[in-house]
Image (tube, rainbow, N blue to C red; front, side):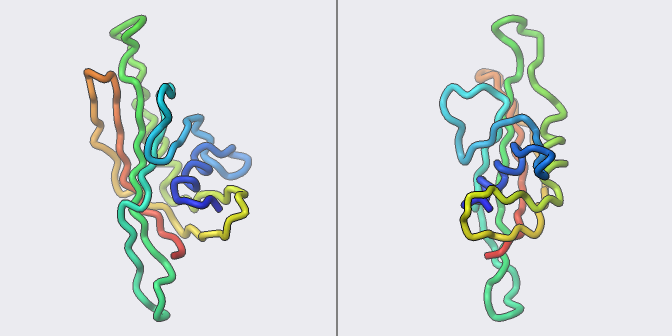
Length: 148
């Protein structure tokens, strides 16, 4: 399993379908993409909140981790044809569909595994258009139910 939740999400969304991944063809980064990276890309803010589940056995053995997944796209092709849209209106839905109900993937890192029981997408949006920056941003509120 990946060392971090964002690493597990990266492995899953970028992973080949033959290995159980979503294979979306989009790069995923923790917190922020490196400078100069072409859009579209995804960033992941992990551990926005971590809530332990009930203490059935006297120990906090499972938690629900709030994660925000951000999709970043260019809005228009300002250099060649200002009226040509580069935004893919279906991409946020593809990410939602890929994550909803998944258990993510093992990354092969050799780290002690953290079992992911389910990924639940609570909401997507609102679609945020930054006209001056030529960026479209779609945040997705995701809950990862996992071992503590």
